[in-house]
Image 1 (cartoon, one colour):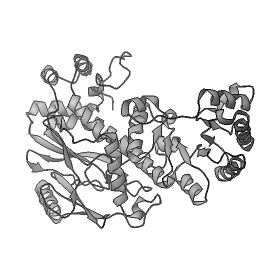
Image 2: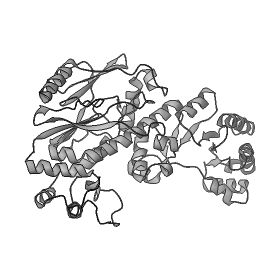
Image 3: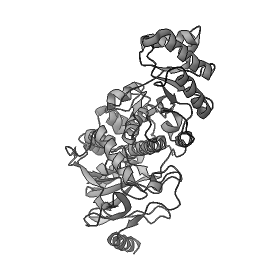
Image 4: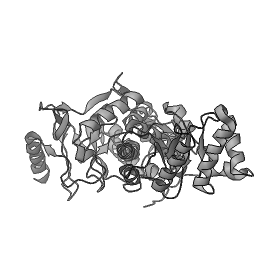
Length: 461
């Protein structure tokens, strides 16, 4: 609801979210609660837990991602003079609070699962321990980043599973929901095993391999398809030629003609099929290429693909060597949102919870233990922090006193390798792209159940 004095004067000089603007990327009530905590002298330590209440219907697991982006934000967070002027213009904040904001920094401790860790419902992905105002104001950005990255990494991992070892390439940025999603998405895709991106800026920022083929417009701009093929091959040895602008199989035959015409100067690496019956066309194209002496030329497919289409093509024996995926990957079309939450679970040394129907909160600081037997994950236990249970603890320290712990956050290559191994430990039916009847087992430790009951009795008394 818009209240009196709640509108900024439009400022068109700062249109992007970056380090100079990100402090204002927060819901208004985070700031009003901060001021209230400040006014009441509430400075004790709070613990907030970020988790997903339930998995989307089409997901057997989630691949946690975005932890690095959250830590980057926490480490740099501060309010500039211009930020404070904007906040003051809302007419809801007093001078004492605004003065306090000038020296604001995040000073807390963060524990998180590793980037690329498979997680399940109600398991903490990240836990923040800090003075309550610090832990409160970061909610919006931390949720935003982990939400989108986890959605996209999970979708990408399903594409990779469906492709059964064939390369999958990110063609999604033009149809994604904003530039930040496309940049952060390319990182999440790479963690999950997508091998390259078409997004040049993402490649520069994250070190992801950049790749691309050609658009139909290049073919259309030439007087003939053959002229376009000659020109592109001449400039880009080892190129991929798009063959479906006019007649797909006629286009494949022109590639064979080009190879005969140019001999060793024809360096075509692959053809791309972007429309039509990809199974039938790939079979026919493979036959034409092989008979034309181009058995070394691969077939790359794109055009409205998702994990189910990819899996079906492979199951039917389509001779396709790689896939370019766009919209379905970039917006996670079958599961575009998560029931993600960031909730207070302790303050001033006391456990806190909610008893709202369908939205319970497990109180206190927690740990998740994953039991591995014979190389397979057999189940997780959500426990109180400090318990010693069988299995591998998943929540590890990544920040202390507002600073990242050196070596705690892996680079992209290590995050991908970790994701690959951790996914490989899941039961085969959980990794599969079809929903399972029996979910992966996650239980709550007896000690945490007892503590939850104790806290509930306290708040209800």
